Length: 111
Length: 111
Image (cartoon, rainbow over all chains, first blue to last red):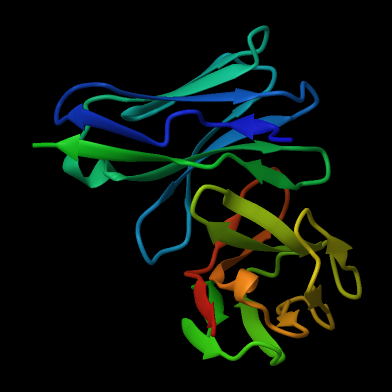
């Protein structure tokens, strides 16, 4: 049973436009939600997180929105750049410091 | 600089062999984790440890074991390698709050 779901395996966005990656979760007990970025042949790297008591967190071009009533979060990247092409994992942290990952969304930034 | 390293980067082994993947971190983190990444499944937790002599099973622990004799190392052992264990393996460490640092991964092929 998937607790963290990324329903879009891939997404293509024009360079300079906004990229929106979506994620749904089922467990309302998660404390933090995180986004990780992964390039081929490298380990995932932490991108941005949001506490379950917040509804928005912004860091430069990256903003994460949390809608607790809908159990939904999204990552906005604006403007999208070629280096943003990667696999993005949505993840949720429980109180045991265990992270549960979604299956990932491959983002392609088109020139 | 602190880091987390995995070795080897690539490994080919035969079915039935015992294989050990190494993970070494110099962050002095108490929490360490092993994940496997497979197409269509994202990152799945195999085993984790919250400190020396502590080990716990994750969601896909069958056929794997870990030991934690010091803070820095969490080796992952495949007792009798199977083709289903062909995957990319990632080790991570954390001091809590989900701030995982991942290694670069080990690509394991079981033939």
